[in-house]
Image (cartoon, rainbow, N blue to C red; front, side, top):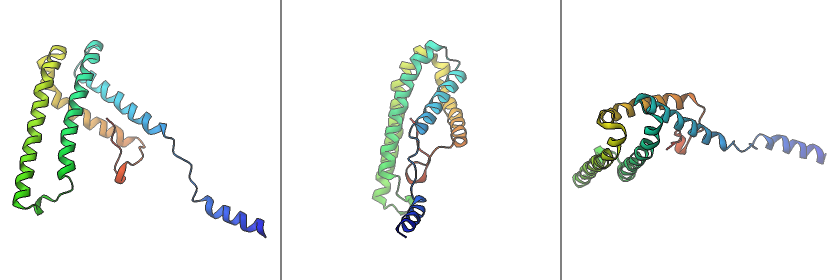
Length: 159
């Protein structure tokens, strides 16, 4: 009888037991997306291997700074409903939004002189359109992958 109860308990609780997910798989997917991004930029901007080697560290650093500036703004204002802001809060929101835009301009102004000797102005001015195109391709590719959900059920962020 004890054996029957033990087996019954094991059977019932076995459905609650899950193996740990393969932690390397998401990292491999992120790595694959990063490589895809690099290939897309290289192809769309016609970068040589030496240009790519010099371009990506500078470009990635500028993107990191841009992302940090935008995240600070979102951290402060992201969960607020704009229609419910008081006049003073709206004024502060506007000032912060302008400050973020100015920070973006400052970052572009700081990094463009570093990129011009590597890829020239012609390809520098192609960067915004290339970024949009590559972002769309990355999203399409990521949606095709079986990525586990990130925080709050959202897909995880890579870079």
